[in-house]
Image (tube, helix red, strand yellow):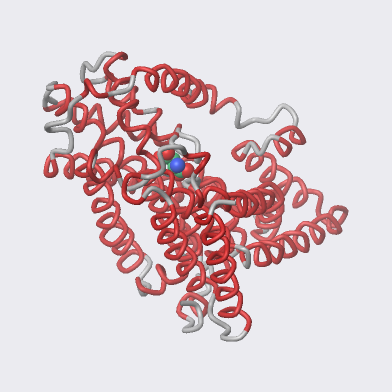
Length: 455
Ligand code: ASP
């Protein structure tokens, strides 16, 4: 066996031992262990991969041999999505006691989601103007074989991103099939109606009401159990990403990466920070401290859907958001609210305009903002969904579909590290809105939010 492979596994097993001891003997908090796993995994991926260039052959990459830990972790959290949304949401509706309250809840959540998304797209545009990420990009270097595979992926993403079809699909023809297919919006729709039905049935349905509440509690406990695996899963995912991707992106698309990371930080600190501080009147540091697990899981998986159970658990247990609010606002957010993706789409528009030499005129900015907002709502919470929907945004200022494919194919191989940042931002935005809506609805336990033990 290859010496590097043996060394990698020996060190990995030792590091896992350390992570375990930190939990067992030192009672270190989960969020700190998750962050350590993230850092160690990244460092091991860098050391045992192809260094800065990344492995030429991803399959033969040494750190890729531990990816199955990451995959196992992702499967474990994904397994919680359906039972968690279904039980917390219907139990939540029952706990609200009055179906009419759902209208105000939904209205508030959707308006906040829209406001933050519009701010995000505008930030993307501003950072694109400042950083000029597309200037000096040579589009003739794009690999022709990459173009064909990207074309297929774009077609798939666009088919899944059609707004009208997605709206219709919210009504499940068969709720069981919606559960089986993890069709988040359809499950939300059915769970709300089911909760309303239980309320309307009154005494007769009281046993079902108790079952839903108890089941929601139990599934949250399972989430806690699964999260104990997070430090190892996050380690394995980071080792794989960093080793196979390398840091080439910094050379090839460095300005795009810098603009995205910075814009996401600014959005998190300024936009969400202000919402938490001035709208909800709460301490900002506590907010970020309470959702570190969700951010780390979002960062390492690049999927807000997969992160959803962790977001629900963090927001309800660390930030004191009532289960009913977390269970309704967060699944909706994971599906329609993607601020990191919106920032990215604004940036990509300027990247393309600069790389192709097609300047944006005054109204183009508005059209880009509008289509980027719609595309981010339509994008699924899975890896690279945002990039694959960029063509719609680019088409509004005269970029042909061939040119869009070229731009997307150029970025696609390096997208993962960008995707990780925008997914972490997407999830942070969902959590911020959940906190504010809970505060407005009088369903926020501020004692828990402010508790020292959280962060
Ligand atoms: N991966 C992102 C998410 O899951 C979507 C995107 O590609 O921007 O939230």
